[in-house]
Amino acid sequence: MSIETFYRDSWAEVELSAIDHNIRALQERLQNDTGIYAVVKANAYGHGDVHVARQALQSGVKGLAVSLLDEALRLREAGIEAPILVMGWTRPEDASIAAANNISVTVFQEQWVQQVSSHTLPGPLKLHMKWDTGMGRIGIRTTEEMQSLLRFIKDDERFILEAVFTHFATADEEDLQFQYEQERRFEQLFSDFERIWPGNVEIHTGNSAASMRFPERMKHVVRYGISMYGLYPSPAVKEEQPVSLKPALSLKSQLIHVKKLQPGESVSYGATYQTSGEEWIGTVPLGYADGWIRKLQGMDVLVDGKRHPIVGRICMDQFMIRLDQEYPIGTKVTLIGKQGEEEVTADEVADYLDTINYEIPCMISSRVPRMFFRNGEIVDVKNAL
Ligand code: PMH
Image 1: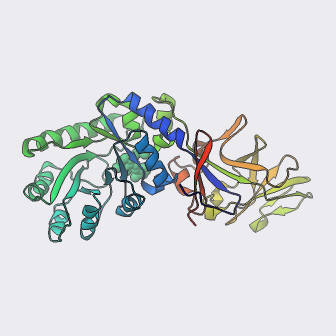
Image 2: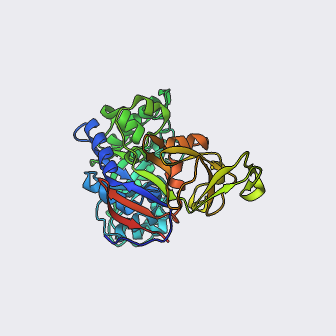
Image 3: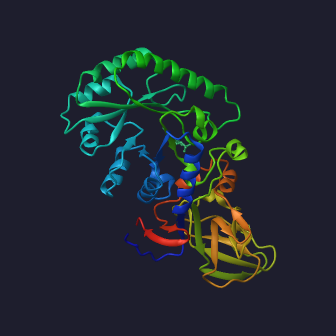
């Protein structure tokens, strides 16, 4: 571990034992022989891909899933040797890089297989075939498409078909009709597949919502994303609480300036906020370039275990809050996480922004250093800048 230095007063804390807890909690709920791929795309949903990947592997997952070949290569460059699947599109001309690094890629087009065949590969290319059972994003949709694709990989020793998989669009909703329809379409495609494909393949279908809600209907492996980070995939699943999760990420800062303003003074760009009486105003050194976007004006942060609102426009690097009293410079500010009895959750921030919790850790930009903890003890610091 190389603890990197940083010289600013805002950072994100990632508690790796929470990730460990969330993986073990899901594993307990799953049937014994169901494995887990840790979904660590998008820098592990903003948490830090290499650290989360290493923790997930330590906690017993059988592989990692990302969206891009670049993301997979970053993990390999960090020395991670576990299976990695690229779930998104890989350009045919880049397939040789995947093969050279033992990275599995997603296949769903006959033309893609033909194009890859025209390049020399340094070794066998591992494939997971994607079936679009209703997500409407990527994947083959019909038995005919599946058949013609399989024809091209069947007798070509450069290809190894490791797995078939699909992705559910509504596993986190209250109404499960379409979920059942997707499962039905998957079974239909699979029965056709079994008839034409000689070997065994791995099957993975479930995301967090499906794997937590219907563990008995999961196949060989599930792909665990949002819940591994301690957030529920939707309010409906949070309500059901099939597994008790611990949020891994908190976002922290410190007051860098505190002043008393007279009545009628204004704060920040556009002078949109006016003090109504004498007010203590604190400046927090984090702004929209860090991912704390301007729409978060009015949102609460925690100081001294109490809620204080963001006043005036959020700037690129700083924002101001209205304090209930004077506080010294260096006083802790919590944007996501707990202080005493109070808590601001990623769910609350998501509600405020009228979006989903997935977006919240993802939007914390690379300018914010990530500090990694295990059981409350700091183990590493990653400063991306
Ligand atoms: N599998 C695939 C193919 C995915 O795209 C995702 C998440 C997951 C598994 C993990 O889902 P979970 O985080 O709900 O567990 N993908 C996305 C997405 O494309 N937009 O939001 C989440």
